[in-house]
Length: 278
Image (cartoon, rainbow, N blue to C red):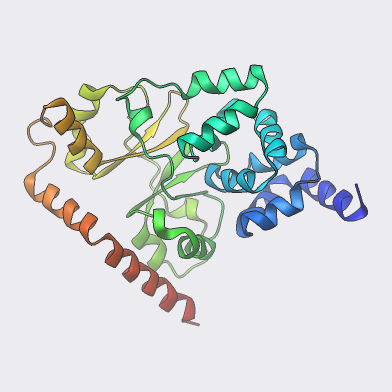
């Protein structure tokens, strides 16, 4: 290990949260280049403070053996959150490289029954941590906004769901507030163990077109969208409970889906204009 690597390691050990924020601001290949020569357990100690999506991108950019070592060194909750960010073929390749105890633990945790909220939730929705300024949040939306929805879920660095903030709140806030100060902390969720009947009968579909999914410990699995609910209804031949989803809401959400590209284009333009404003 050369002097630069010793200095990097010292910084990671002394300031893991600050280091995590810095790594999240870099391109994944840059982060991987900085980390790959360090011991996997030290890399894991820092990446556990990053959001799962950021960690997944860095691990994918690391050599396969190093990435497997990093996941093995993580606590199970963090590793599960990271693994859910990968498409299934990649996830299986990574699991095959893990040693037996950790690999077995993660496989069990990932095996939610088909047609439960945990298996149906989209794990790759755009999320933000609560401890970054709004301006940095806007920069992240500009870079990775293709997964952003109207609701942006806020998760802490242990993958626990903390709250929700809307794109509009972020875009109109001209201060340097932290994201956590803008979020709504009282949030309706779906249990990852919820079955089809429980999902379909959830009363909050009358208010929200997307619901976050969490496990019994509050760890964020992803989001279940209204359009997935409609697909489930079609598959099982059932109907949503009376009054849970109105026709007008369905039409509105379908319109949002059809015009999603335009919507995100408008958001991007608003972000750029905001960025140019002194």
